[in-house]
Image (cartoon, rainbow, N blue to C red; front, side):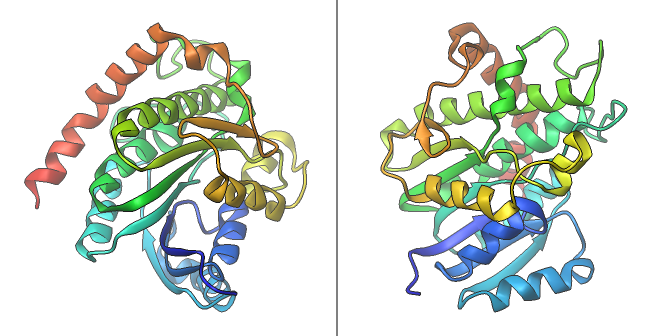
Length: 275
């Protein structure tokens, strides 16, 4: 199969939908940079399987998104390689933990991994995007079941795994829309999507493992990677649909932008200082 993409960066590539997506992309790209939380020796078999799935030049970077400095370091490694990124897919995610967890950075774990870390990673890689690049953010229709509570961003009150996960995905879908607005003056396209319910380690921990195979979710991700849709679109079942009213509320959007700036600006600044 001839390559459809030049350089692709994919997070969450060592299991579930991310791994299935990586295997497809190995036959659709020239260079495939995959990220996972595990040390490379621990996922050597997964990496080898992705490498064997196609002709792409596959590179692995270990980064733990519960540590935002890991995100900074991973972005720096990618930028130092002087690549020009054609497609960035933010797929890394964790389920809501059985009990509330706070990261070393001081944030609720689900929110940090599923929303804050992808935003930081993307912000640091924007200067490396190629002309006509696309950013695909893997959200979830679960964002529809929650509302923002900016008085309790880290779910200190009434924590539940579903609440934490749904609020994090609500933040992800909203941020994706805000990012599209930021990039409106460029030729970068930003798309978010729900990959559907798939039988992955993440869904197994929250729903008992129901749903289709990860390859089905990967197909939705890859559709979003090339579909002719407006920047800022949100997709479900490969169709552009309106996200929840919470995503579109101007007050929510303003408060989320302020929250992201407050929490992520120090890491953006440290990345610049280290150059």
